[in-house]
Length: 381
Image 1: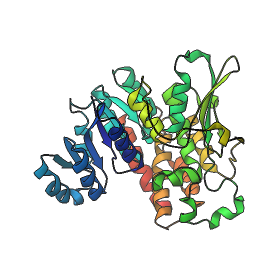
Image 2 (image 1 turned 90 degrees about the horizontal axis):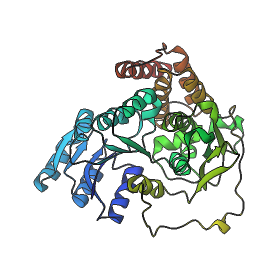
Image 3 (image 1 turned 180 degrees about the horizontal axis):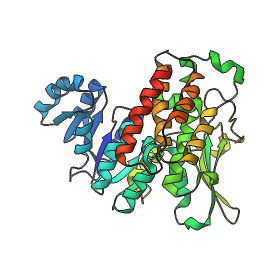
């Protein structure tokens, strides 16, 4: 039995992780559930799965959580520090980091320090602090298993292969809802347009990141750190069908790819079960249904956020942290109808350019960069 902590249990990845736990009750149990503000759903999940503890990040929601769960013998707490402390519990084997954004960094660090297995769905952890995290992993027994469909595909394609035989990594992208929309129409797109992803059902923030292609930029940075491959050996290709989730090209010219339906249950199941592939009755890919799988180069002019991500990882240091902070501020502003879709990239680029460079940032440097970049991005709104 593997005891699982799900950080962000009320989000899309968190809910699907609970599906996996229900699918294999003899293998997995939910030991810790956390949420940001969705207290009612967290209560509902806790009553069903009976974790040892439930934590709400927003203190304003805490009294409701405590009143509902403490009579059931479920411990409760609130705040970001409580989440980071809770993952260190000796009963927890695997931490699923499904929190959105910068908030996933602190508990991931705490989990690594306690040698936990990590099923990583929070890409911002490696975007913000890739060098710091990989350094910690080298000194820890902790292992990271990627949950993003693209990084899971790469991970699966690398099993049994030698690292020095990698020629390049090929990250596939759906292209999002505006792949075929003329660039001149982007100033007019609405929030509803941007949230209408053609293939995946995701949370609002990551769906907007997909629409700007910032999500793919984050995945480039994450892939660099996860697989120890320089960014100039990572290629992004647009694959609208989202059937080939990513590929690895080797020095002999062969390419290994992982295919599957666009369903996040698959990479979550693989991360939790690794090295074993767990049997599932989920719908399977019927290849004959996809006679036409197409690929095209991304449009860096139309989607400048992808280029900003490559620039951030090229500059290194604390610049990816500033990139992420500015993007979180700009996306939140767009979701609250304060700016246009095309303004997201403008705010992110200005913030990156104005952020003082730190070549080898400590955790404290990253906290300061995050705070300063957010204030700078907010001033541009």
